[in-house]
Length: 168
Image (tube, rainbow, N blue to C red; front, side):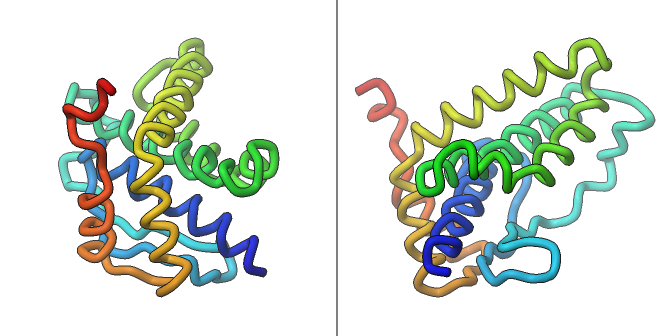
């Protein structure tokens, strides 16, 4: 049970940190309390009214889709630190399905594979880059199980690398 919780904590922390860094959506809650559908979740504010990709695609919508898709992949990347990449990928099928469905609005069927691969690579890069923030947030989740968005953002903010440290 403790290992499951730790994997879930890293998974949700990966989503939250990446989402925070990309800055397209605000989350209101992060938890590792399981329910019937999942072991944990990051709860976001609703999509903005202007986000209707089925009608037209704008650069703003494309940016939101890209951030969402990258964040979907980031959960498995972070969980891989604990459970190994294979188990993390296996448990992330729902995230991958959501990523593919959302990405299909931004690109055509023929570009979808390359788009998803690029998004997964970006997720890996961001998760590796911001590992200290993911470690800190996962640790807090293991202690409290549920954090408000404000609590989580405070932890993330105090553990993100500053722009000048990224070069080192």
